Length: 228
Length: 228
DNA sequence: ATAATAGTGTCTGTCAGACACTATGCT
DNA sequence: AGCATAGTGTCTGACAGACACTATTAT
Image (cartoon, rainbow over all chains, first blue to last red; front, top):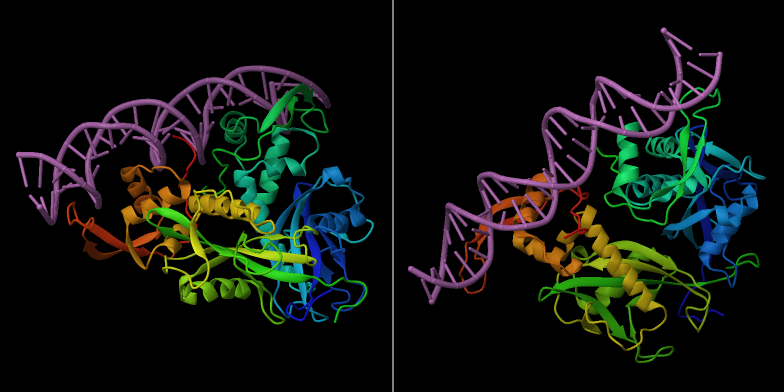
């Protein structure tokens, strides 16, 4: 298939899949069960099939291990890593995707790792760097897109949405100002369903209005995480 | 080299290289001189060498055709395209870079094409879509990064910088407000050299202060192209 | 009543666009 | 003087963070 003028490469699609659990961001990781890097933590990934687009392969890598419904996984391309020595076995180019979903419970293989607890244990390949890139991408995309709703179920409350921002950004967000910006600034970020739900498990607290994600994808103006 | 469990791919690095010429944005294009798509317009690109990182290959593809100095070409990864049928010859994955530089004059091969004049002629492969993605990326990155200086020589004036924004965004920018935001809002976006130069070729007009790019890479707050 | 949380109103400072005005070169 | 362009000052409205206050549930 490959002629002498273009060397052959192995191509993988990997995924940095994030969920919210217990108010903290978690990343899907596996432990490698074969060389190289046996026992090391790694991102789920798969070799690209002969007739497969990279995004589909990345979805496959995540869905195989999580039991998520394909429609509930939001994937977008993060970057491609092509350093010649990044895979000791062979020359491998990895197209990495950022994935966002609602917590589907424990994976069939692997573990949801809190992203704030930086593990001392080493990562396989260059995955430590990729994780950093992925988390930073998620943080910045929350500022100017409606991506946060991908971490929430179909219906949610404004405080739920605020907790997503707090978890991803790792800082508190003022409730009243957040509410104002979400509801007023960007048209169609969220739309009210008319329903309400209890404020918390105890039942205390004023009931909360329920919303769905609107059609907007970009936030104008952005929700800045800069100052304060 | 490739075992049965991972198919082999050809990998290319392509570049959407942009310059400013005559107040308009131009894109480096070539005409294909061999199948497939003989005679069609295409982005410069090259197969990735056996020990070459994709960014280096993209730089090589541009430098080979432009005579640019490597230090004068700003490259950053745009996206990777992996649709199975995008190259009729073989299965090809292309890592595409966005390139920005100062006008180096006519290329040794190819042409600087004004990006506003959408040519009716067809593009090779999926390059038409890639060009759209690249231009949109450039437009949005000018909002929140200091990327615009990559299209200017080492020293430039505030009106020069404004004309970059006008060319890339395709709209006028208010001179006085632009100046205020560049100089006040973001620390170290540009730094004055102390020199001045004539306002225009005629010599008429107040002389202009000269600046260099500062160390900043991100703009806080961003320069919005939204309203008005 | 008190606790807990949602949600509203408002004060104040900053920054946006808009634009009048001044500065400095040339012919 | 008049033209051309750079650069300053300022008005006004929108929006930011901050925070006091009200609303609605439960115990």
